[in-house]
Image (cartoon, chains in turn blue, red):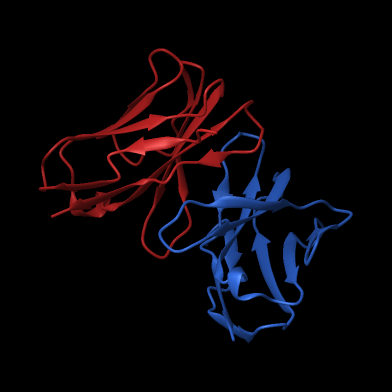
Length: 109
Length: 113
């Protein structure tokens, strides 16, 4: 079983739609949580950190449920430019990041 | 400003050849990480340096993989006697401090024939 599990998708949504991604992690010692975005054949880039209190950055909202070991990302008013793979990432504090396999989003006109 | 750079961007090797992949981190970044990303998967941790010290090499898949950062800046990942399963994108990341945001380079795409 992978340490970080994500639905690979693809999620095909129309422009303007709201879409939600989830992931679960197995290591209860995980301390830090992130969503990264990776465009095709590009490097991963940090989208946002995830906190237990939940946090929002414009159209993006991330939530963390430590009890259920569950992380979510909500994207509102989807844009064509949101098309990418979204990687759920955790860290135990060892410095190394543990990535999920990613969820592919395709926003269609 | 200059980000993390990696070279070569693409490398084709015959099975059994040795390869060396280079990473130039962001200037002043103390921590440097190597990850391996297979097709359709997320990156997987290989090794971590703080300055010139290799503090974690638990992700290196075999003793054919070796990494160094002798002067605490540029790092080289060496793979000896490459095998087909080594084909992947090798990503380097650096951060200002150990648990700071990691900035990734564009990766080296290694294909072993």
